[in-house]
Image 1: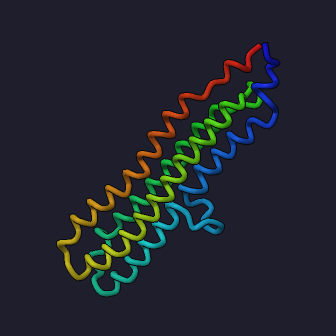
Image 2 (image 1 turned 180 degrees about the vertical axis):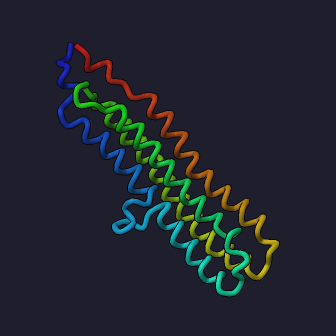
Amino acid sequence: MADISEYCPSFAPFFGFAGVFAAMAMSCEYLRVFFSAGAAYGTAKAGMGIAGMGTFRPELIMKSLIPVVMAGIIAVYGLVTSVLISGSMSPSDPYSLLSGFVHMGSGIAVGSTGLAAGYTIGIVGDACVRGYAFQPRLFVTMVLILIFAEVLGLYGLIVSLIMNTKSDNTMCRA
């Protein structure tokens, strides 16, 4: 029988916290200064389109905020995952290396899909909002494309939640 410390080394929580960082840094807005990532990029890029369009058609600004709201939802996906990961870690309980790697993969899954979805929402939001100023029939098309972009982040959240349920610390109990 292997020693418990072999399965639960003292550096195992590093990988869990790396998952928390990946989920937050790649999909959320809190590192806007250091990373042009996910929701921050989507918000900024769509915001530039709204600012450019708003000077010509200010009555359309409220309907044009949809890309910004959808980019913010991507940030919520990363936040949910990071809270779940950090909630399963406790200084008083042992933490296995397997759980660390699973949590890191979970954070990378939601972070990388949040990054892709945020970039997509930003680019589509910018182009469609500017086009919407000239052709109001583009609104439905814009919303549909934004929904498809948002689903990328939702897929990452689903995979992350499934991975989170697979973490197991029972091998660390004596």
